[in-house]
Image (cartoon, rainbow, N blue to C red; front, side, top):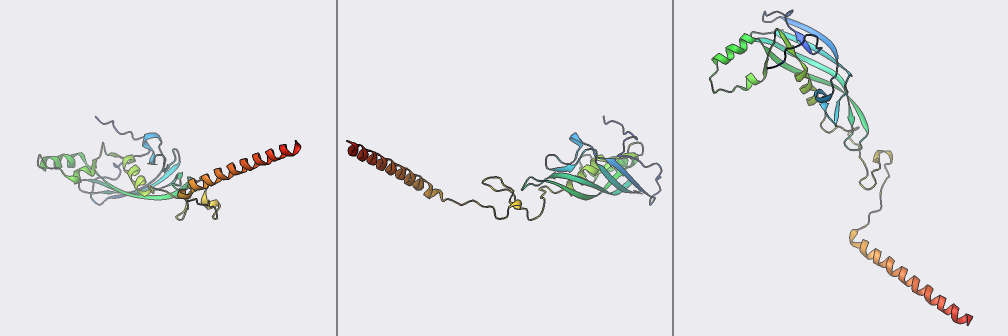
Length: 215
């Protein structure tokens, strides 16, 4: 059994003032604090609206035959990090949404007229009003997530990090490493070993010659 809606919740809206006359309109504006934890507005670990930051909501409530059609826009500031260079970033976003909240009797009437084995996608998109109230949080969260980039970048042409040393390439456009062909790396190592061996033999020979001269 679902918990009853609490009118003190800033994301719960009451439609009694709107009335049930089809065509009636009501406009509402409200600023709420973004939730955190499992209810965070965004993609956890990637980009999200920080907990406690302001979210401005403008709503248009329209009374229709079977319920209340809610259309709105949410404005907020999201924070995350660039997926290329891992630098922190901020994004201002506008998230648009629309949701139909049905009257209980309309929901019951729809169930009675529907075939027992009939599954209606339209029914899944309609949320019933509870005592004339509706909870906007699930709708708002979905809208914000859809408005956010799945792979945020600090700028479109961000070059990212050096794959060799991890240096941020935007800070040093001329940054590079001399590439060594791995096919020659072993030969280069062998050549260095041979050279070191020759130097040791030469040093040994020179030391022997010095000893003979001293005798």
